[in-house]
Length: 75
Image 1: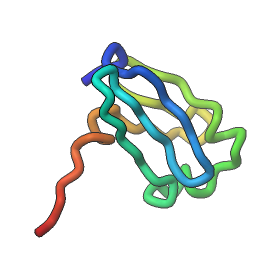
Image 2 (image 1 turned 90 degrees about the horizontal axis):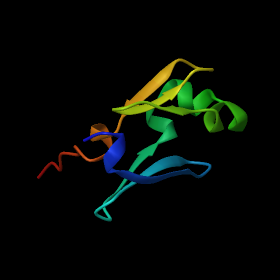
Image 3 (image 1 turned 30 degrees about the vertical axis):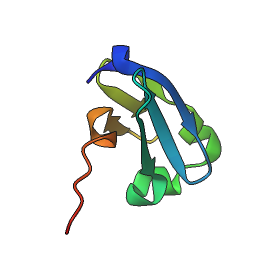
Image 4 (image 1 turned 60 degrees about the vertical axis):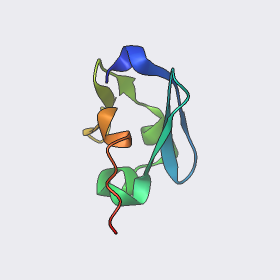
């Protein structure tokens, strides 16, 4: 999965969402990432897209697009 598969990205106060061209939507909660949890709104909104993910230069955090969709469900 790479940037070409991503249709859009949006942020709420609690999470970042990635929608793929095929309609799948993945979500990551900021509270699961200490740097993102502590970041200001402007720091969170200052992200750059790379070929394989999202980078926040102000807080030196990276999330891969694949990680949004590799959730394992425990039984």
